[in-house]
Length: 224
Image (cartoon, rainbow, N blue to C red):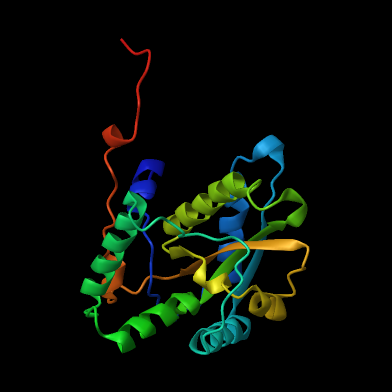
């Protein structure tokens, strides 16, 4: 699999087999991923890899807080797009495709809640990589660098036969994450990546999100 194939094949996996992922496999993925570019070689990323009982505790408390209606305090917010924007339209389009594949009707509140909870359980992945950064860098400063290392993690994982899902629901309650991982208050918890062996039987794993043609968002200047 070359780089182009990996980039085009990578997709968000929302259902995993129960098979554990060996720590040495994830370590090798991270060792390659950190070759991502970063501003002035700052390398602002920090990884906390969770599995087993630690991950189970986090998932359980995440869901408990969600069911109790407790508002989260994510340290990096995503998905706040204006309702009338094309970005929101794309989000809705993805949700419709997901719910259609999973046979979740629009008015089926129970199934919609069950699906929501999957995200707060890291989609039942056997492991997750939590990415944080030092607060001295601010919230937005290191995001480009973290995005680069995040993409590398997903691509190298794919090469290893693993699936990933970049998701913020798992770290929606930072207090839960800190309770079970010991991540210092001096760090900003940015994002999580669920990782494991994809479950081919889950319909949601067949989502084809598609991409806008480059011609729609590219301006060319100075070419003859």
